[in-house]
Image 1 (tube, rainbow, N blue to C red):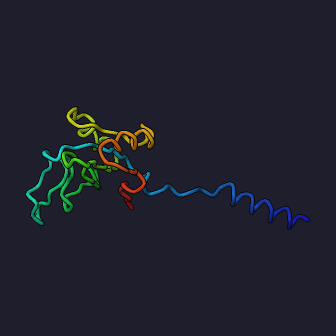
Image 2: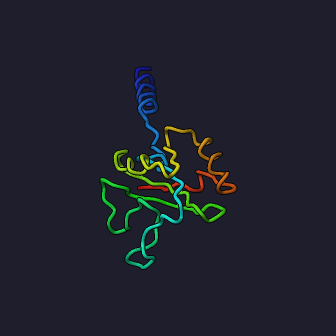
Image 3: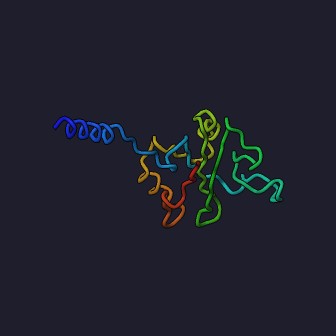
Length: 135
């Protein structure tokens, strides 16, 4: 009887204390921005690839800055929808404070609201198919 009780308590403790891992798409701080294609930076060479404004070169990504991004052009080709990822919100402040671009901060706005706004620019836009997965 005591052995059953002890086994039951240990199983219960294991279940109660278990934690779910965080989905990698929800780690770090993330901002989605609508950036004009005219503001793209980089010469287009292998050493300086074309990339959205605020995006670092692949070799020069700082752990204190933007550590990842992904982009997709809008249907009219005039803008790019870009997701920027950083370890701290401070690294994203230059993007959030730029009044010339529209930004959506993940976690502050609902995914449905972000998708609805961006589907006007990119037909069938889906956050699930767009997000950057960071290790």
